[in-house]
Image 1: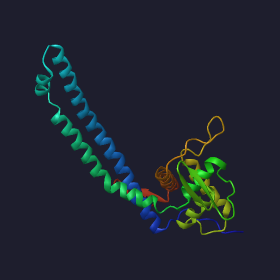
Image 2 (image 1 turned 90 degrees about the vertical axis):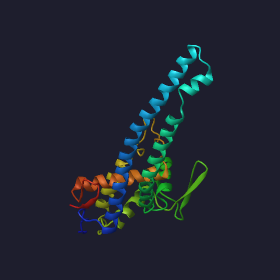
Image 3 (image 1 turned 90 degrees about the horizontal axis):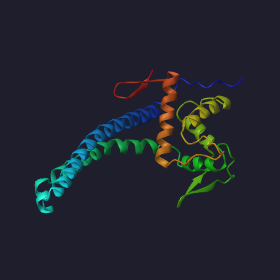
Image 4 (image 1 turned 120 degrees about the vertical axis):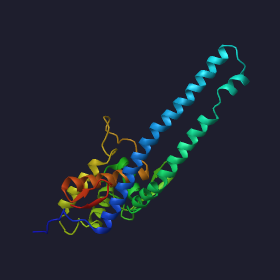
Length: 226
């Protein structure tokens, strides 16, 4: 009988990557939400000035008078300031996301694109192949399912030859990734971008570990062994 996969283990390096990614992703969501509200208020204030300009013009004031009475300089400055603050706040977290996604196999996106066209478990030519996405071509060395199984083993969950257990884990991950399901006409949904796919994959993995009680998430979104 083959040794069972220990689904309660995860390599320290993998946990660090997932924890950094999770903190960055959650912070990005919070920052975007915060600045969305601030920008909406700033843009509403600018729109109000435009309305007042129109009303003043209808009352017979000249354009020069209206511009002088209802300037947009401060409103535009406020919007630019908020956008710059938001972008500066997002930059370090985006770099962390980029680094975390970069730990995934180089051909994961190609394998995903291939799966969109041929099927999740579709066989890959022995020497690999390329798949075109827009104006770019991506290398595919393993199909999507095999890519996931390789990641599973690399993260410390594959200390076993129990392929069924590893495949079960892979199926859970695949099922959590938006866009892998087929639409009502039987065709695959719109292909996700390379970074988006990486983010979805990592988020799905984190959620699985949380559900299984392997890891715990702190108030700062950092992940630790449960």
